[in-house]
Image (cartoon, rainbow, N blue to C red):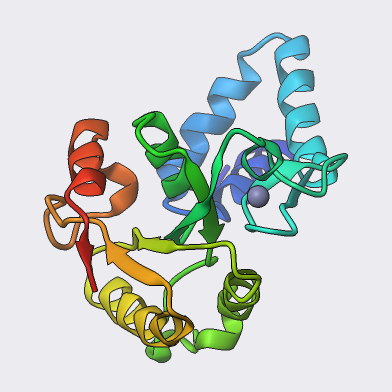
Length: 201
Ligand SMILES: [Zn+2]
């Protein structure tokens, strides 16, 4: 026998398609699931099946939202300060900033950072939509909270060049976050400080 029975092989192959999952981890996950009661597996497969049906992106800021809402929880919240927009590359970073409980403005999720080598130019990101939001006139400050790596930095510079002519203050969170580390993994205290110590571009 050089393979497991087909259904088990199939599951292992499916896991291997996921990011950072190699054959060994895929096998471990598959064996783990095989040992679970059927209702656990039912719950997992339901979660997988529903995530695409029940989640969409906010039409204003591109954060995740439930399918029944065009706007995400943050954009729907009238208590938030709509004069400040914090720009992040992914929803994970937005959540991280939310957990600091220091920021009460709105967000804009770019969907990545500029990366010419990977074919990601301004058109591939939600930059145009950001500029449209800013042109409505209510925003006084844009805080750039992108990864302090080369590409995040280049994206921040690009955005600052586009936004400053609109007469809007552009700031960047202080990089207490060590260079080369993902913003996503920065702890909440570091992020709070980074937000408080933001610098004008
Ligand atoms: Zn939103």
